[in-house]
Image 1 (spheres, rainbow, N blue to C red):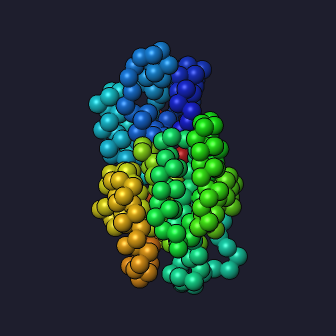
Image 2 (image 1 turned 90 degrees about the vertical axis):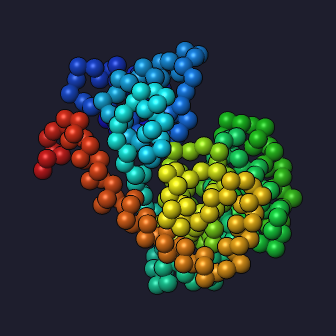
Length: 282
């Protein structure tokens, strides 16, 4: 049984599978799951469940180190898999390098919660009144934040606020975007990164860069502050050839590191190491 969220499943799954042949393997969803204060009680129960699972998959080396130090957990680092999105019926022979098809300058995708910092993206939007922005935001449980976002987007003529977009329809927005802006404070390894890179779209991340992959492989920019995000967006939007070259690098990195052909074999190898038998040996 392979699962990621919710983390409360760790204890219940491990308890119900006790004594059975099934193996329970948890994928750590966020760095925040690896660094907890063990009071109040729910965190203590989570720690118990996390230690009862048969295996743990980490999304980055830094996440594995954090979990080992904070939770006493060990496991294996396996890159997130790029699920792939439906392709357009007419393939793009330029591989996404045709600037005329990139009619969104900056795209933001996320859920409406404080960690995703959607209001920071609106600060970026205001800094470029002549640019075109798009925002895909799934509803969250923070009603005041949702109200703050929707009230502010109404006054931003350069922003297309799209609200919730189903996963199987979102690929076109990544393909149309010149850049993806990411404002989250804490993540594991964002699927937003993988979706952007699959479409050859660089990421400008305010804070998150798991194992420094963006910085090391040249997949966009890691800014460190919203003011620097604005500077980095301005730089990349002003140099179309540079942006397109980074997009090619993004796509190549994704294929080498996160494609199903690469990742699935790593999972099967880990399952065998945990004692899973049967069909995996064929």
